[in-house]
Image 1 (cartoon, helix red, strand yellow):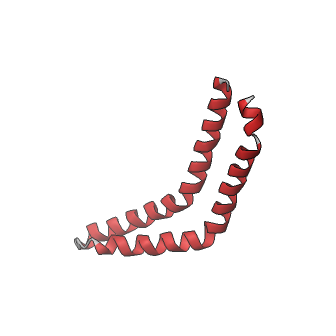
Image 2 (cartoon, rainbow, N blue to C red):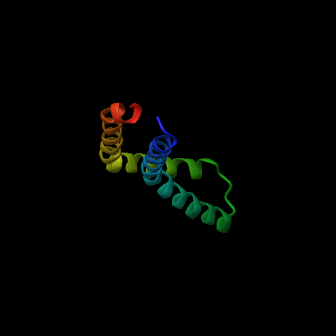
Image 3 (spheres, helix red, strand yellow):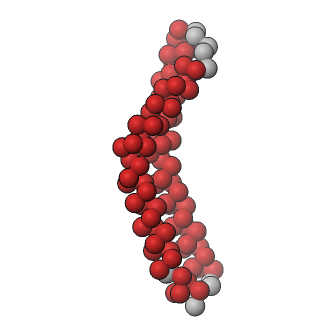
Amino acid sequence: MTPETIYKVSQDAMIIAIKLTAPILLPSLAIGLIIAMFQAATQINESTLTFVPKLIVIGLVLLIMGPWMLQLFLDYFQTLIKDIPTLIG
C-alpha cells in the first residue's frame, strides 16, 4: 500500500464524513443562532429553549435526508470493500 493510496482513501473518507455531517450540523447551527438571538433580545436564559428546537430540526433532517445519507455511506463502503485487492496489491 503506497502513501498515495492511503492519502486517497483518507481523503475520500473525510469527504464522505463532511457530506454525512453537514446536513445535520448546518440546520442545527442555524437554529441555534436564531434562538441565541431571540434569547439575547428577550433575556430569557432557558437551556431547554435551545435544546428542544435543535432536537426537532435534527429529527426532521434525519427523516428527510436519512435515506440519502445511508445510501451515500453504503456506496462508499461497497466501493472500498470492492477495491481492497487493488489497494493492497
